[in-house]
Length: 364
Image: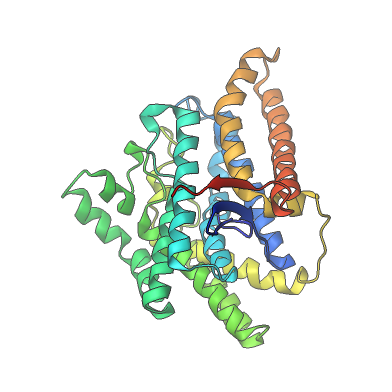
């Protein structure tokens, strides 16, 4: 996913190989840990408490009321693309041709995951891996041939013009490629380029100016105040918590949101990142501890978690001798968090430490 340890493709004359590279301060590891933990919880929760169509059959139920009250937790998921943009810049590895190969790999993983979980009918559904791959390519192109100013302009336009483009393009065409830019939940096109490229772009720019300014107090203060202002604006306009959709919780209110929700995403990222420099800058984490594992193994945690939620849970649910939904809920939550920890630790063991390198012979 490009979050601290994203795949770097190093093409030598004879071989292609993939390897992980990590280079993030302790405070960003904490931010990533919080986001990944929220991602695991929200996906597992939605899968456990909804029907096969991700809707609610019993709206007065306890789980429905809890879900309705805590929809704002979606913000911790939507900052993941911003973290991707941040790390993409921190890595200093955004050469255009190499980025295209990274994007192809992410597209492949994303489409393969769709096939494995939902079948051939949904193989070309557009999810976060495909979106991040496209955003990396656009960002690398703009940095290679233009400048960070153009990234700022396109990021701003992506956020501010998204509602207008949706209204305009929806009435013109019902095309897969147009859906990629504006979104279409009915066609399983999540994470549209507008407005979410703005989130990736501003994550990239935050890292860009952070590298330039270093530990500059003024930069941190402005970033923190801007983040708080965005969050206050979202609260004041009542858009910080998307409304729950009884028919499908993964609704347009989350993936085609109001502008204030996107600004709140940026605001939360800025606030957590800056506050982290004061509280967690010099924090050391255990190599295979849960914080380090979640932080460095995010790509494989995401893919494994989606596979587990989409495949293994249903097989297990049918075989568990439990009639109490709450028991199944807590058993699965404990399992999925521990499972994700193990996946993250294994990714550090075999990939971050370069003990497993996949070589692909170059075809002449």
